[in-house]
Image (cartoon, rainbow over all chains, first blue to last red; front, side, top):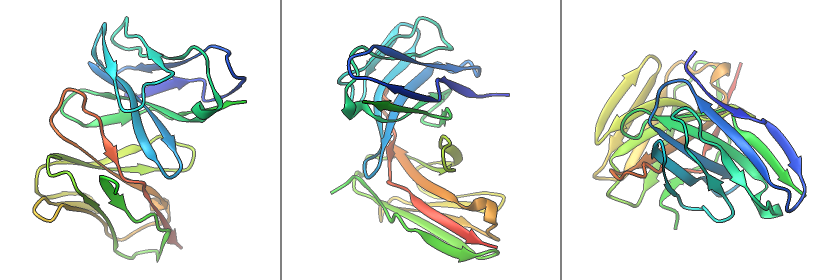
Length: 111
Length: 112
């Protein structure tokens, strides 16, 4: 089944404790992206990657890092999480144009 | 003013009704228009994807884009309780970033 997977689905952590959210797609898509979804603000792009070893900032990159060492994986790294990063995170991938497929989401709470 | 405006609802309709969902936008550079459906605690699921103006039909769903009015619509015919979800419009223009600009979503409830 073609899909985007994310892990963990739910995470509660404390301020300053480094964490990684993994994202993997099995559709051989070159493009991958991370979004966060917040009430009243909708979905906003954090980082994106056009291909392996090519990443760039989206609209809200502060406090996040990403890497793209393999085509299928695009982890999101929070080196020192803060409470304002409490949100619902989605990974997406795309083969062509702007048609993007989303993962199931990771609900992160930073205390 | 937000780039993409979408009535948050909720919109409640009886089963079998025709549903009309709409978004307006301000950026004339948008060329790609999408509708996503999001069930509670799930990721957005791509429903319809259109490029530029015109209509596109897929089963019970029809997407319309009117670039001259900066207005897009999604019609759902013969609505079913399983259509109850939040519907997000999204759009983008031709850059490498492929960032989607989303509406805030309309919550739809189809009553059996």
